[in-house]
Length: 434
Ligand code: URA
Image (cartoon, rainbow, N blue to C red; front, side, top):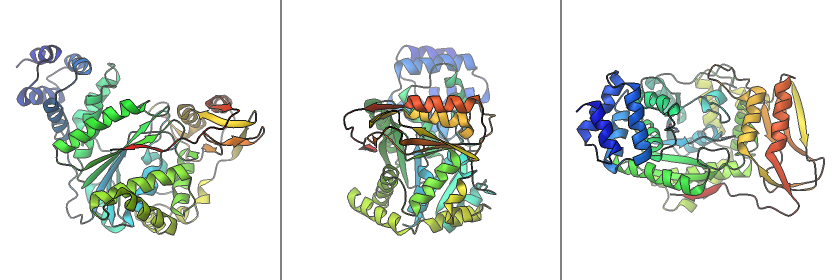
């Protein structure tokens, strides 16, 4: 069938069969189908959606378009936790060691941050000497020894998704649920794991701005997992204000390590113990989520998980003394305290503005080429629901350069806060579990 006939069929709401869709997608990867033809097809999908059968074929063809990480020789039960991205999201850094204390391994590909959200790869760069496992062999060794298997994305995994995503980005077709769901799930299915946990962030600083949209996306992703026989749980977590208090690479590792020492912020601890509870349920070690969360909370308090992170950092050539003494992460030359302009309660703290403010200090990239300063960022002292007196410190900016961008970052952070005279409830971190 000619490419144009495939586009017409999709445009006219007719279902494409397996052979037609696969051939069209593979021809795009090999360069026979052009970008303008694929753009038209993607727009037809954006407008008309995909049937379950087409969704399965698209996901499978993306998964099979490159190398798959099979992790042969790994004996641990393996969890792949994926977050859709948010501000202050340092979950993987503390979660993987916590899971390890239960004999559970983590197997995941992580990315670099772009814009107001950060990436796990950049966060670990704050540890001097640290280099991620770069091959499957190194990843297997790391999982067996420490339980932690985090690796950077490589070009030969799901290359079709990479090519399609780049095109979607410039053709107004990113925000389509079936396209997002198949893109995320193709990457999960390309890596061996026994359980998949997707942390879908919801709110101002996230891709999904409201719960209904996030639930719809979650349903599609879980459905894809089921089609491929994978155990998938989805946590919908709040991103109306940032997760935890630290935003910025070194500061976020500091906070994740503090949490493993039993001194982390409540919302962050609740998120990692909930995800660990789900993993224990998937592994079959507990029969209820409540039991799993209870076990995870006790383990977190015990401080036992620090050792796994320490060993992982050491194995990866990093200075593991940063894990025993996380204060070493606080290295920016200057700090600036943002003060409360009035008495009252914090009624909103817009996550996207906080993330963008930290990015302006040098904690994130505006373009792919920007170089990150691991020392800079923001420590929040007051979040939504917090009671404030005029002149209290709301947040501390950690910075290395006094320039116009610093002034802009302060102004933006100021504008992220709004206040109320009456008490405001602290928002829940866990909004739904599916
Ligand atoms: N993240 C992905 O991996 N793919 C999308 O399409 C959107 C977010």
